[in-house]
Length: 253
Length: 253
Image 1 (cartoon, rainbow over the protein chains, first blue to last red):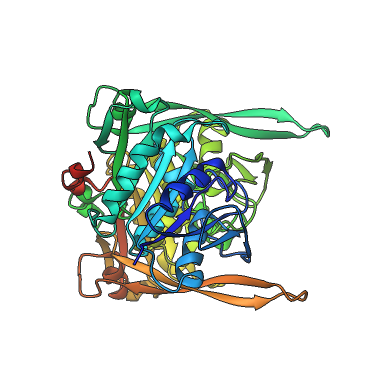
Image 2: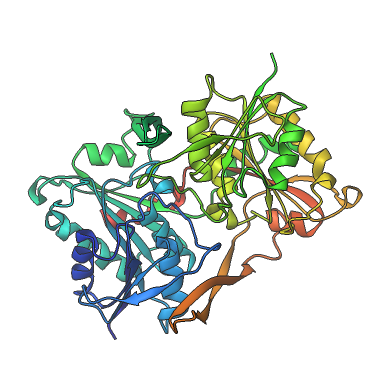
């Protein structure tokens, strides 16, 4: 029997990135697409509990079933696994995101939160991102590596409860040097709120910022892999406990 | 000089929980409140990048400055640290949430995401939650423990980049047995989408679910601490890397 593959994203069901990913996924199994009806970038692990959720059939992917959903990326995974699908998916794919989700971006990213949710639901899950924000980004250069990673995931190579954060550098296929399994780089955004005035004289703000890598020398990080022409793969878990500090903090008891 | 304490939450600037917390905080330092203008439960680590943000002065807390913000809890911390405050806060407090944020709830919680963001901004940060969803919840029973934890955090007892997830059982002060520093319990939500019809015959859904503790026997978890009458304190970090699987996954290279 062909594997059942759930495909979602955070750029919306009609984004070029998810179209490319669902195309590759359909070579490996039967695909079901449940993705947001609009852009949901930066939604993190948000879920919809104060308002209602709707779904609507779409006809854009070459899928067994496909729906747009008014909810967040995490809602889409919950809706698919707990309402739409009759059985647990064999694989959950999220993306391909238009733009990097390396290092600290993993916690802001709707793409990656959908993958984390897939892992929480007990399915091997992978989030893919291309380091190119353009709507005209050339996803095909990454096709070979995406196929390779999906193939390995389906061979049961993934630990339970862990998903993969895959980032692909903006390079031609021939320039990509391979895949590196690495850790999340210590980095941060230094924000700047751009203040503007509306036509009625009231201030409003746009959140902007600059990415700062706190460990540019480290060679075992996703930032290093990407800067050096590799596809970065970070195993990601939902346990946020800082285990090594539990003993130190016993002073709080 | 009195410490500068930033107070935020996800239930909104006028929620009873943040009012109680800002009251306690004002005994320890000068407080600034920047909190959402509406309930933002379940917003996780969402940030606002596809729309604008506004802030408005409020006059509900006994604070040096206070604002409501149209953004998410994480936006509120970013706005406070990068725009409103002239210097980095000595402490960031989030809550008191109306309802538990123990175990897996940490990744869905706007309250805890604000605390994680505070830690990312380099400030000692604590998220407080009371295991009582009622708007009439009696926060005062927890006051002693909240004061004790704030006091220790201000004594520089907290590791850099780590925040605390503090959950308080719904008990009278005398029934609370003390504080336990523990890890995030392995647990999950099994969702059920409640299907309803709108007056026009179209389906819509409410996300509901049941909490499942995968390790009810473990005695070093937040779920155990709460079930046994303790205030649970979990150190939380933004590094989501599943470090122990990096080597196993080298097969993907």
